[in-house]
Amino acid sequence: MDQGILIAYGLFMLAGAFFGWRAGSKISLLAGLGSAVLVFVGVWIESAHPKNGFLYISILAAMLSIVFTKRFVKTRKFMPSGMLMVVTILFFIFAAIRFIDL
Picture 1 (cartoon, rainbow, N blue to C red):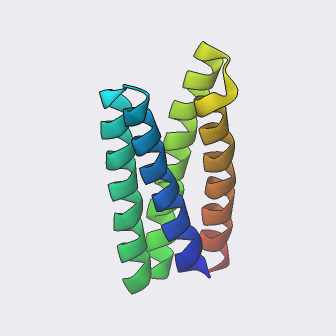
Picture 2 (picture 1 turned 45 degrees about the vertical axis):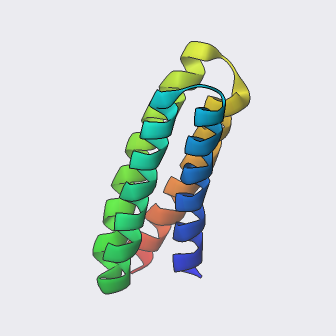
């Protein structure tokens, strides 16, 4: 189940890259692709070393949460930064709990 959640979040980031690109933002495309790659690296690490993988994913999610929170505060628009902020904070909570439980 853990792998499924991690992969789903990575796919969510890929979808964000695609929708950002469709809206005309090359920066969103690159940032989304980069974020997705980093998440999938975490999936790979977690498959071999769960504790290290969830530490990596927790740190990544915390950093992304900060980025999305700053964007949301700046734009005050829920879509897309607010939605990404909420989903990423929830993902961070999941990853941190899994790290602590291992």
